[in-house]
Amino acid sequence: MRADIRSLRIALLLIGALSAAGAAGESKGSPADGIAKLFDEIDEDGDGRVAIAEFSRALGMDLKGTDLRARMLVASLDANADQQISRKEADDGAARMVAMSVSRLMALDVDGDEALSRQEYALGVPDPKGKPGDDGLTERQRDGFEHLDAGGDGKVTRAEVEVHAREQAASTLKEMRVAGRCLAVADQDRDGRISKEEFVRIAGETSADQFAALNPGSAGLGRRELLRWVTTQTKEERAKLLTRLDVQESRLEMRAAAAA
Image (cartoon, rainbow, N blue to C red):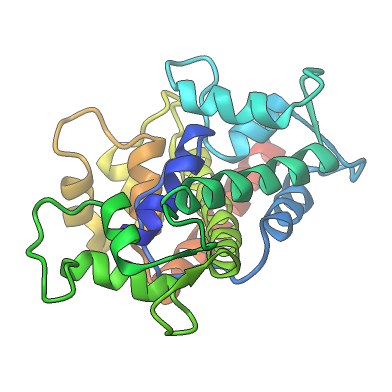
């Protein structure tokens, strides 16, 4: 897990973006772009509003369960508490994600120069298991700092943090949507978790070992486990997964139409 992404996602976690770090498949769009794409998929009648229940299902969130973070995310988006999320509310919520992420990391700027030095970054992103090098940073901290330091000048500016935060917020929304689709398609008994057999149907025949790694117990995979799995995929793996989901969704639609 990359230290820089972990730090930026602390704020996202507070409002429901439950994810492990991973650079694979990251979006280069803004969080508003991610929200717009979600609306295009979820807002079927095109009126610019989505019911909370519908939005939650699309992201695989169970608002009736004990997932406090999911409820916090929805509450932060539904600003007027009308049980609907408008496009503006969603866009504003995505902007708040970025602002919270930036504020959290820039709070490490102890000398107030609007940039993070290596030492400031290391103090704010501890790595107790790592061994510091000559520069005082562990390998994980160095990797995280250099990932943020796009200019390569040894300073992470607020602008660099903002760019990364926007990309990360958009990526997180995309990953949540994919995990939500996995749960919606595979969880046929609607118990909020998917079994090994259900997982293999969407992940492929060679995914049994992955299921065992994600599910050390016997309760099956829920949204959190699916989201963790989605974030570790390469672009090629993600593309294959989306294709399988499209096929499965088409089959479910055909069955529903035949039963009607």
